[in-house]
Image 1: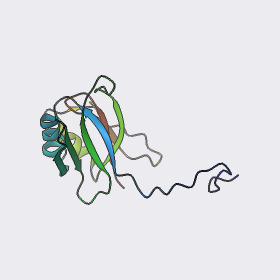
Image 2 (image 1 turned 180 degrees about the vertical axis):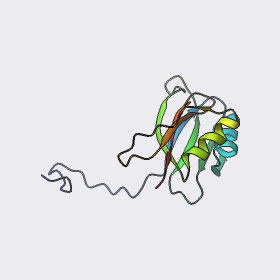
Image 3 (image 1 turned 135 degrees about the vertical axis):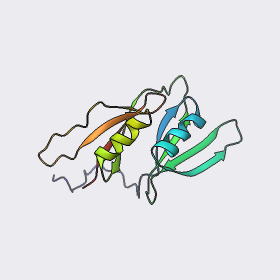
Length: 136
């Protein structure tokens, strides 16, 4: 079987995209300031769910996928490696700007070479790790 072939046991479900990825946060207001004011993501949704929960989503302008800032719980801890990779046209400028504003970023930009773009990690106020990658 090649990579493009489906297994004979495949279930025919139609997935058309990735709507959002969730990041657990202890304080949604504080998280919103970090993601919107510092990272420059736009507020996409801020809704009261009616059960004491707030559904909060941010995203880069024109992005299809958003980041849902969800309240932490015992089974959803903060301080995780989110696996999220955010793109920037200039990693060095983004790194310098985040450092200048006191963000928790890696000391150095990683430059592996061999076609791998420059990148660095940033942690939100809850210690959740995101990676900022220079887009080519």
